[in-house]
Length: 320
Image 1 (cartoon, rainbow, N blue to C red):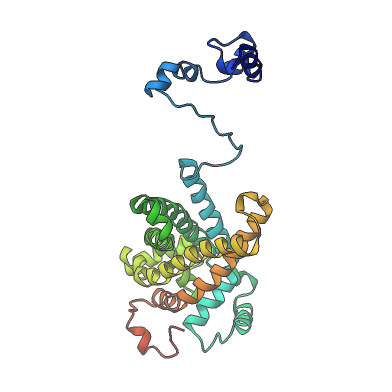
Image 2 (image 1 turned 180 degrees about the vertical axis):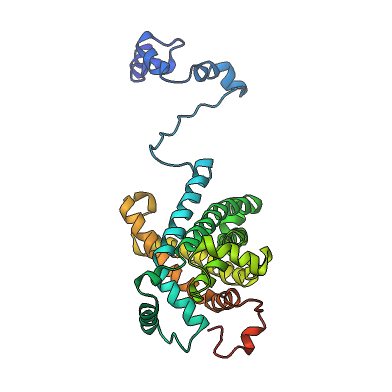
């Protein structure tokens, strides 16, 4: 190859790729990079593989986004649980009131419509919201522990299983995490649930939580507040396991089969709509699963000294 041909080919290659020193023309580009990258990319280091630091561009931060499993994330889930459980249960207090009375006295409260009529005739409109305070406080406490600890246990069990098995058995992790969280959440809910049922099903017992709680403790002792803890676990643990596992699965299927794009590509309003749809379907499934134990909780908390065995001998009582 003659010298003229070599010079012509060399001119086609940018000068900075083969120059031994960086010209001032290209210094501004390198100053944008980590200075240690230039130092560690010297020919001697590249040949020996002794680079002390790898160079990476930082990913752009997304404003307003909470880092997954950070302390802020767990706090946000806890607050979300308080609002979602406490406020929603309080809002349906009239329906819950009729339901509890139908479970306790099915001959008097034969249906939802007739139950509302009986309550309106006997107690007026104010009677529809009896027990709203223990409902609000009880289910707010339950929601805080349920949603907060669900995310905690989900991460904990995923870390124990490892990334491969966590992905393979994710439904089992959802079930285990939700069950573990509900065990703790029901301990917070149980005393409020005991007072709520007594206030709602026995009109002369107390006007609300402030009067009903000390009266129940005086009558049955502190342990009386936890008389229904076992059937409450029997109601809430399957309920929560079904709720979280089916919710996660339904949402995943909606994004996979219904919406032709990933979650990250969807707008916030569409993501919220998918969450509502998943929650609605999951709610129907978990209500069916928990119904028998729900009857048992109402029965035990209504009568002093009642036991699980009394359900089979009590006329008109049944789990369904």
